[in-house]
Image (cartoon, rainbow, N blue to C red):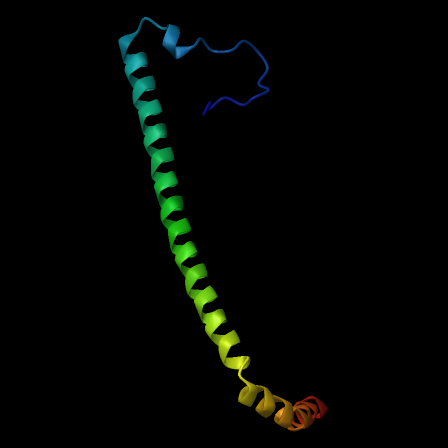
Length: 97
């Protein structure tokens, strides 16, 4: 990453890699090394987060499947349809206050 603004007027500073000064080269090499290490670290953090989220998705999918299996049972369907008028009555009482 370049620290200079993209549209900076005036002459560009000389490239560090074209320099004969070993200190400038060493500093540039260290800067690039640190930049690469930071990018690798960010990649590792994101990979870990993706793995966590994929596990959560698997757990939620399993829970949804269990829920769908429970609600597909005929006895559950009968209870839901029998209690629907009562639930509507209770819901209307809550909103009317």
